[in-house]
Image (tube, rainbow, N blue to C red; front, top):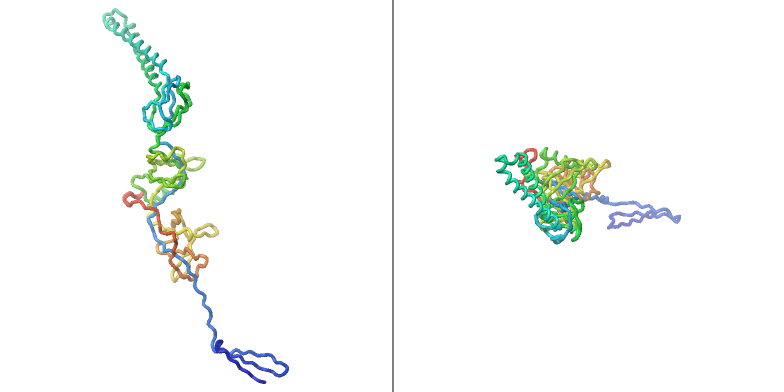
Length: 399
């Protein structure tokens, strides 16, 4: 039997070949490796984290609403007659006391002149009776009848004068007038149901929105517990978004909330007052109202993409703990502020919250944390309210 040994320096091992006789024995391969190859190491998964910080977070609610005029006056005739003139331009601004229509005054002028004559007659009769009753030349009853007649004629004269004034239909308030619902030559009657026109005061204007009563209760609880700071005046600031999505340039204040909860919807009506010098807001216009409800001091914010939910819907998140070990942390979240959630429990300042690489991070596993980088800065917050304008609603001395 012959033995042949061949060595491969690259593989660092030798191959021994046993050659049999003519019958062709099987080859025997023996490894003579002088060194065992090293095992391949698995790299640790990399995750992106943000370090949790606390902020004084302005809390706001955006609700749909409708614009309403500050004051609305429905112009109706108070006497019956034919409309002779319309004395305004439709859609223009009118002043309080400005004449809008002229109703035919002829019959009312005649009634006024007749009342003047009747009052003058009774006045002259009373003047003649006054010295005569002192001399007992006229009975006391005749004198008293003359006095009563004069008072009645004075009242009739005043009614005739008022009706004559009412032939000039005047604007009750200053504002913008609508189109005219009657034309010259139309017959109108006193206190009719149909309007002549409508005058609306458009600067300022109201914006009415509805809010669930549960949200109002939550705000009151947060204020009573000191979790929410409000303005000293007690009036929240209001901003608007118009129908085209643009921001309205003027800010307003929340004036009142309805004192009764709607039994059908469980909501209350909130009314805000906003300036409208450009007459951009018109009654009936649909807007979105942003109500600044207060400031939550020391709130913990977490990016929405980092918050998950279990099968029961409870919020949770993955945290990089000591020694870079991943931990699953149950959370309680509040409202959304931009692209972040307000976390009421479960997170503290300094916690490293995993934002990206969640699919590679498992609880109990070790990871390599890296600072999160994004085109959108998660730390951006809405503008805060000046600290001097804030008070604690439970204790006004706290600023």
